[in-house]
Length: 379
Image (cartoon, one colour):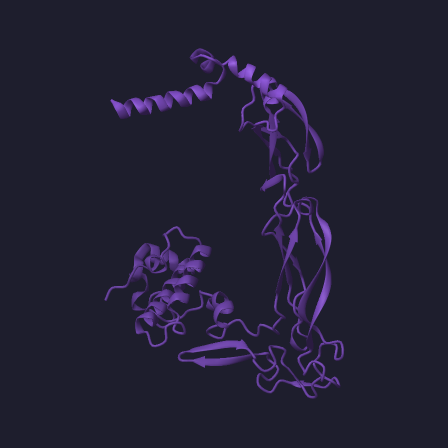
């Protein structure tokens, strides 16, 4: 049975980079790994096929030979895989690829050290002003913290022995079918140590459940979904192992006046009918104070005015966004008799089709469209 093209096996183009190959192999191997497909002979065959393809394509010399001669380059022991097709040579770092997924399949990579404490996530809710200008905020979160009685060692008297299960290595080897898998020791959690007389307050774990308060510096310009990492402020690790990290995720409340789009701000500016028709100079409020906005005569609803550098200073660069002011012409309400009379006189000046076309072009265009539809329906 002829072999499939190695590029086809990994679903990559012939110009794929080393990183492209690594990602493709990772996807392929995860899909067909025997631990995920127990008893599936076809999956096992596909898994071996992925290994063989990556073994060749990840090695520059073998890949060059394969590109020139195809599978024939490795027949009859020429440049093969250390024992024929399907074997494993030294070119591909499978342990590096699988280390985080399957606990260092093939037993490569050596001990990975003690397990850290869990990372924690905390969502902080900010006003738009707080997100734009930054602040120092105090938060309180439940966590596992280092036991003060035993200083996190888990021992009541300081006596620590070597872990009997992993013999101080922090890692144990598990056999699963044809594969050897290296994983963190379940007894000592990777520390390689064993407590002789456990601390009563923490039951030998070296940590206790509590809550702690932290001051978090929120940088100016953060937006929804941004995360701030506080190294070592997560859960304490078991028996003195390193603590995890705390990730503070930003959420921003809706603002009554402004909407944010990246580093730009948008707001609606209502105008009276007379201001829009005659023009005016008005004062508007921005997040940085007040600003003057000049309204030209005959301004229509939907007109947008841009005020440069009145938006948000980016948290990732030195740039500053803009403020976009969207005009909305407001219909007057609660009219006095005098105002109503003036408007009636004003409206009387629009009598006649010519006046409508001259002073209200949008209305005229709309009426022409309606008239055209009616004529087509009745013709």
